[in-house]
Length: 317
Length: 264
Image (cartoon, rainbow over all chains, first blue to last red; front, side):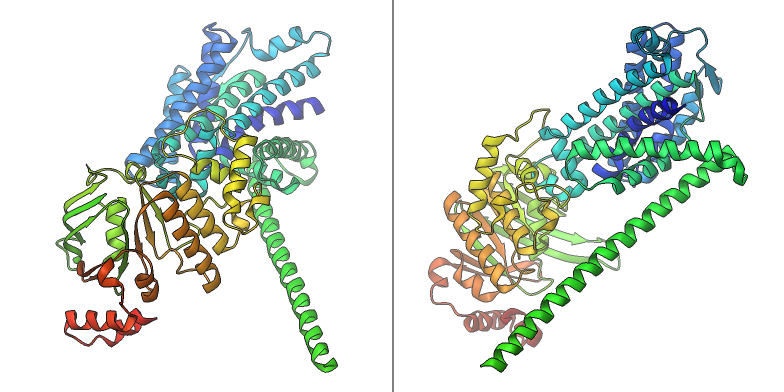
């Protein structure tokens, strides 16, 4: 049971790192991921049922996501529309494409097909099967996280970070911001689709509606992570995203498992997620207000002390 | 270094809001020149800079940078030759990144690849460079730039701009948003870097005294054109009041509002 939450959270965390790249690093409000997550699941599922092999299936899933992200970035770059609209366009188009990929069906099961998650128990045969799934997923997440960490330490990655913080600076350095947006969005959606490909194998089916509400869930996980600790180092930022993703999944599990006591149904979880994001925003806001209030009080106190001292000096003189 | 031929810029052409910002302007700046640009608000100084830098497309005319026609080149391509510093200290640096990340990005122009350049050797170099600012930034390499004051950020912007070795510098009132002390520091650093790297410079300023004290050429703009162009010789015994008188005699009108703008 507990291992299940961790596996769920770890698979989800790769998607959240993708959302982190678009929302937090590139500062690009990207809704493509609602579509590209399901695209990844669909592509991986169809590749596996066609017996293309595990590696190819996940590679194709990632590539399909990258293409989706590149299309969003291209719409935004060339037609000069806001990123939000570009993402919605791609997401909507992807819904039809996902059903096409799934061969005209909305749901394709992975029955009697070898997947990563049927293979993990044989690879880690010294563990019991649910722990084997956890260890296998953990290894994949560590690799994915390291790739992201290394990428954002390279000159290209740093310049993508700079683009999200200040586009004029990138232009002033002779870099075409359009190219960086294409690379960043491609990378972000490749991770999202890769995560979709993993989830399809874990749950044993691909569904055209799998991506619904992914953005908000991803944001919720990012915000939970941001409460844990503060850092500007990419390795710690991705680490807290992984923690945030697991905590989010645990919260949702609690909602599902114990929710019936207060009449919660699984369909209420989206509402809960939204409320979670709103609460996170409120807490973040009150926190920053409190810290600036605190700073103001301290400054006032210092000023008063200085003032009193001066007055004292004058009196003494 | 910079040659501008019959440049014109019209905003909202053929509408009721049509506004001629630059009107058949010609300018030739020799390599190594330091030109100060003065003029009242709306005279076209910033538009001229934006046209040279490539922020706006031109309506007519040609711009040559370093002997090459750049009239239709994108802003990021012109950035290889031109380094720009704006009035707003937040424009030149990335607030959400550390000082060292900002500096490694600024180390050269052009597209980046999957190489890792930031190493201890570079950090030593950055510390050396930051020491020139004498603001104590050399001990704060890992701090986010957003934590710095406006003056520190503008000084860092200046350092980062010269770090990528442009041939030309466009300074658009780059000390105007700073307090007098920091403005002085940034201005002194600017002069130091211009001399050290022999940069051709155009500097817009509202400070008449600066315009007279710095540089070897002074141009005054009005209504989208250059109305006064003074060489180093002519600048020598210029004073603020003489400059204002010149402006008035050219305009042949008494612009009280302009006078206050120019003398402050």
